[in-house]
Structure formats: structure tokens, C-alpha cells
Length: 120
Image: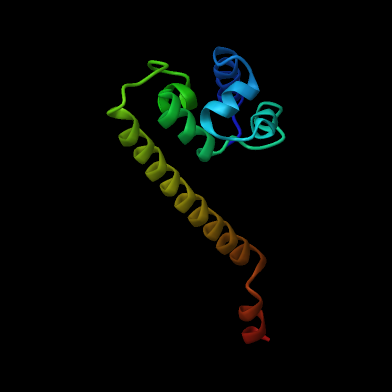
């Protein structure tokens, strides 16, 4: 999930928590992990988003989309994370279907090798 906006908001969170090391300690990850994400050497992961939302109560909507309230109350967090995970699964399924359709289209365009053998 590479997104300029998420990285920008992660930088805000780092600043609010007194730096990468302090943030890493607050959510139980390695400081190098935070650094790699901020420097775009590693993708923003749902693992990181989940930790920021569950442990520090940042709103997934704010973190991912940049809209809504920055923080959420405790009761909303699990529901929003579950919804995001379900949407991510749906997106993965749609991408897989799209790749399958693209392969099928390519075979139709190029002529399927099995069809060419039958014709010959």
C-alpha cells in the first residue's frame, strides 16, 4: 500500500510521539521498520496501520484517506480495522480476477497454442 498521503500522516504521528524510536517503542516495532516506511524503502503495511489504530487510537480513515477525525474512541477501532481488512481481501480478489481476465484476453488476442495445434 504505497501512498504519499499515508507516509505524510505517519511523519505527523512520528513527530507527535517524539521521534521514530519513541513511536517504535510505543507500538512494539523496530525503529528501522518505521524509518524504511517513511523513506519509502518499505511499503506501508496493514500490520503498521493496525498497530497505529489499535494501540495509539488513530483513525484508520484519517490514516489511510486523510479524512475524518485523527483519533477514534476505543469501541470504533476493531470495527473499522475489520472493515478495512474485508475491503483489502475484496481488493485482492478483484486484482486476481483482473489478472485472470488479462491472461485470458492475451490468449484470445495471440491465439491459444492449444487451438493452433488443433487447427494444424
